[in-house]
Image 1 (cartoon, rainbow, N blue to C red):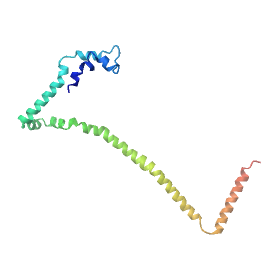
Image 2: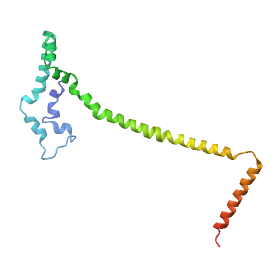
Image 3: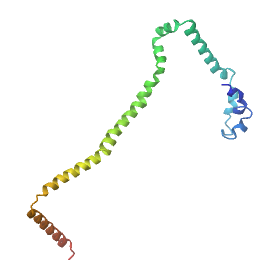
Image 4: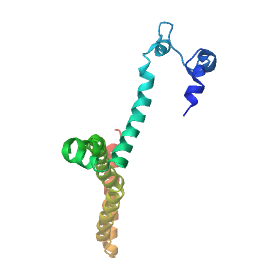
Length: 167
């Protein structure tokens, strides 16, 4: 808690150039670090005063006068709920980011995973099963049917060979 006070000169004081050794670069016309030293005296004290005041007020309200917080909550109900719900930041974050991410994830799941990744192998398996059912119908067990199929194939082969030959 006291490190900033102890090492002030190293961090932002007179020895800052040697301490940071070029790690923090500001342009030659940028004097923001120098201007940080010239703020009014109340500026560096404001966070400490606000913190100590909040701790003192909480102690007074909850230890010395425990009935006052309930009366304040009842009197300023809207403001109390707004502050109690952390400015509704979680609800806003949920509406903007979480629901959008869930919608996108669900879309990728339904389209990418179910239809493409799972669907393509299933579709290929279905196509192979349909081809197998068709091939089973061709196999009758009769030699005459096989001989006829071979003669038809030979006739088609010779026809394509003769049509495709240059004259």
